[in-house]
Image 1 (cartoon, rainbow, N blue to C red):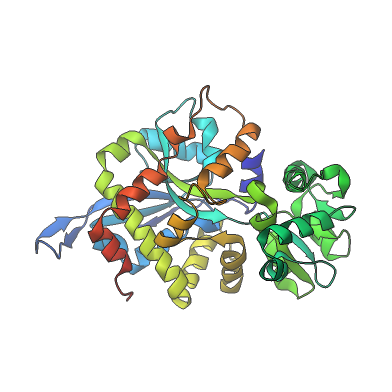
Image 2 (image 1 turned 90 degrees about the vertical axis):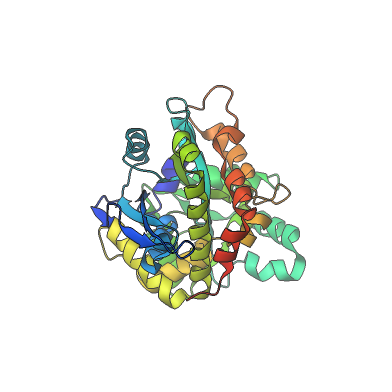
Length: 376
């Protein structure tokens, strides 16, 4: 159910191939010798999360590391898993929870790179009629702000697609002893209908597909982001990942570490060179969606409000910090009871190995130095 919820956020569309295939000659600045680039085949799903690989490619970061990115558009994860097994791909776009049903039949799958925290699960309210976490937290602190907002939902009306977002609302309310029975639900058949009904005045709050949320928040100042993972708790914590096969990782550990280094250097461009990175990001997203739906401004808002792409240092503070509410395990354990086809004796540490590779990267002074080198 949650895999469907997550993947319904952006309409999927399958298009052709991006990038240049094959091995190409390169110059190794350390040895002064020509070297052959290793081609890495990466699938980009039609979602915001995975497009930074195109920024890295545009910058030539893959070539600097002796790699040649071949970026492929693929909308269905099942096809990606099959492609990994055939050797068609090296990395495919994924997420922690949506990978679990595949482990029974393909136990060698490994999530080894956390790309970002998806924060698209957010509550949209009406400006002037609701408090927001962003307003309250600086004044009264995280815990009190979260509780005050959640309790304020009691008796209010939510315009949602209940089959998708009902559990999300329920999980959030249960944090303060309430449940979905303590609010009113306007149930709609699809996200656009719910979004337009909310825009037209129905309901006090809306939560749904990311395009609808972005549309409402960019339409005018009539609507506000009440809060996302900050108030939703584990129900609002979702990590997107890159997935590979363990035999590939075993044979390409050095390559995997270079890929991590490329990703984190790219995150610096995303934060420090947005005028350069966001147009590339938007173009790539529209390409994989087969449309021109999103503008650069909408991409900026999506990244600023609904996605968190940590730098190498920020990942240590949240994603890989066991003491943090943002630790990756919290998300897996929360959603696990709702996932179908969980393998018997499932152990997240067997399949979620991003922490291992992150630690290996941090131990490599040469790669860390390259990540932190001045941007061009």
